[in-house]
Every structure is written in structure tokens, then in C-alpha cells.
Length: 189
Image 1 (cartoon, rainbow, N blue to C red):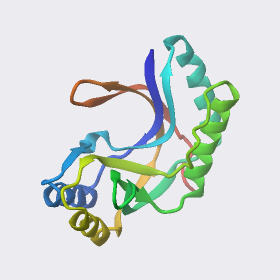
Image 2 (cartoon, rainbow, N blue to C red):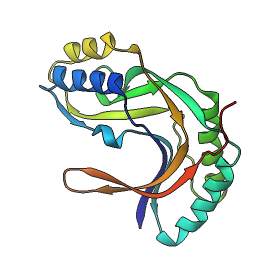
Image 3 (cartoon, rainbow, N blue to C red):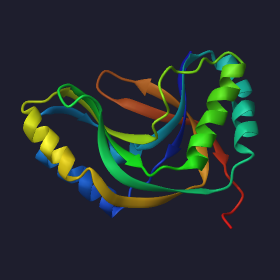
Image 4 (tube, rainbow, N blue to C red):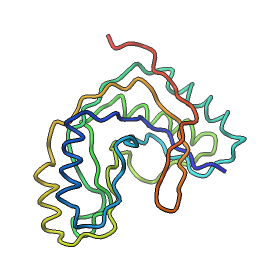
């Protein structure tokens, strides 16, 4: 069995790295498992534990779904949390509203649902997880640091590919193994 998900990889620019490093420094007194910048990705569909024999079938479904999409641009322009201000769980970089990304995710979700890979009950919120929170010492200080950077232009990125990943959990880290890379070959006009 492999733990699979479909995602867009982000190669962070200097702005993203600067804000990421600022947050790590300012929030260092808290217990946060920071995602390494080389692992930043926007999950389009989490598939979960899957038999290896189903991977070729999943690859075909993804190929068919992305065949309708051109290379896209996305704007990373906010920082947020999942959970509440009282019990934050995840720190993330978010993107400006992007109908193409939303449509791509919905196409993948619906096409996979049609063949038995069940939809999540959550709404699709495109984001790049940057930290998983274990414990916050001072929630007021934490929230003020997040709020001061909440709306900020971080990076415009070009999406040229979609990747099927395997997530491998070790005792301390999560590694992402690229299983297949799908190119969005049509150029933006």
C-alpha cells in the first residue's frame, strides 16, 4: 500500500523564503514542525492508502483530467491558519482566488470519486502547508505575528506540471516520493 496524493510543487522564491524564515524565528519558542521549503506543495487531491496495482489506473485518470488545462499562474498572497485562533493546527501560504486551479482540483476529485476514490467532506482551500502546530505558548503573540503578515504579495508562480506523490512517514519526518509527473504542455497565450 502507498499513501498517495496529487499536488503542485512550489519552488519558493526569496520573498517566500524570507517570510518563512521570519515566521520560524519569531515563533521558535512554540512547538511547530516546519515543512522544509523543498517540500512545499499545493495538494489538489489526497488519495490516501492505495494498492500499488491501482496506480496505473490513477495515472490514466489524472492524464485525462489534466489534458484540458494549460500552464497556469498562481499568486501566493496570504498567510493563514487552519483550526481556530484558540487552537491553531496548521500554518499555510495561500493563493489568490484562481478559477483554473479550483476547476483542476474539482475535475481530479470528481473523476477519482467516480471510480471509487471518495471525495473529502471538506471544501478545497488551495494552500501550501508550512508548519504543523503541536503547542503554542502564547496564543496572543502567535496570532499577532500571523496577522501582521496575513495579506502580503509573496510570489507569482507558473504551474507547468501536476505530480502524483507518495507520502512516506518516518519516525520524525515526512518524505515525498514523486511517482509520476504530468506536464501541462499548452503555453499561456
